[in-house]
Length: 129
Image (tube, rainbow, N blue to C red; front, side, top):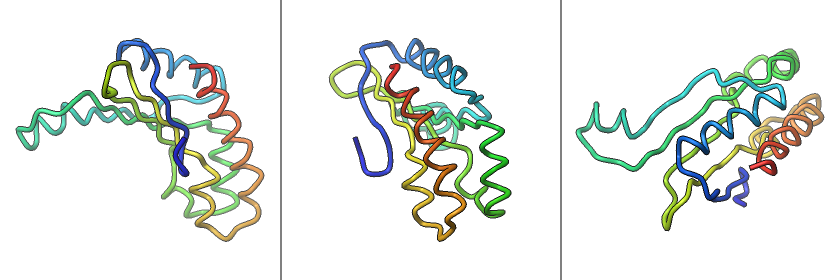
């Protein structure tokens, strides 16, 4: 684990790991709003070969609304990012942001409970991998 997220390597090929993550997110009420393929973008924009590395922007709409109602500028921290990349030594590394770490930068008590609930849902996704 890293201080700002959950991180582990799963023994799955990249595409299978991404599919599994997406399925587990859905079970917890999250949809994927965005998918950024850094390997593709680095090749296109810089002509650089890079390992498979994808950032998924996950959103749970009811909780996104609650956070925006509590703190209008919280959109700077949304959506919840999930990363997948080719792990050194094989498998796929999966990382999921810890909302409590991100929300810790904001002095707003109304966000504490929501961040905790969202973090538990994301931890459930992580544990299911």
